[in-house]
Length: 317
Image 1 (cartoon, rainbow, N blue to C red):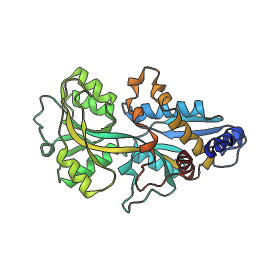
Image 2: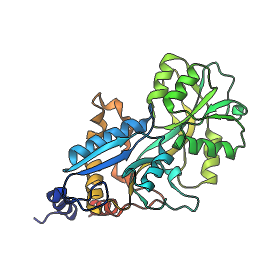
Image 3: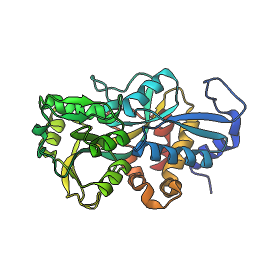
């Protein structure tokens, strides 16, 4: 029986082993060393990026992937364009340029999972709705993060003046707990470690964002969808309406097609391994359960890298 095109293609790649391009984008005969930009402390990006790096290193012969901490989405895109990293995580809205195209030199490897926009306050806060943020001390996430990008976009849509602070998720949670800020935004997977830990130490609430979700969907069709954060996500926190944003794994366009093909194959063929890569049980990386072939190809106006596109084509045969 003849081998399927995808299997034959991957077999040739793995047999080639060290004949892939190295980190300096020049022909190399040694192992491939890749860098993957993740996110800040306390963020799902940091955990899932580490899981992806470990899994690719284990499953793709000759490839070693190391993670690079970052501010998250916008920071990762900047590092990709500069050639500092080869792969990077980003929210889809931050990836789409004003004219609806992808940033120069970058394409998508796949869609991974959806993040939800959290607006968190302490349980006793006087902030009950989005408009109450006016004049308040609000963390917008780390500089160059997807949280900053989406939070500023929705604040501008609703013309809410505020006292913005730029803190990572872990820093935001600590500042909210200590009374140094009044509210924090976080665009992240559900649940996210920093908010989980905060809710376990001190009662918190999530502010509903249903009107804000509708405004984003209307103003920027494509990357946004209304969603709900379930009551099971955080201790003592009720189900709350919000907006969801897909996350994508981005790659530099100059990565070899066969290398990207192999990475795409191992992500979708061994999704369970990515979930378990946290080494502390499946609950450590619940977002990985969203990774599947059906949604993985849906990267909106961001084109797939030729290697990833070839893998998805082969899956349909």
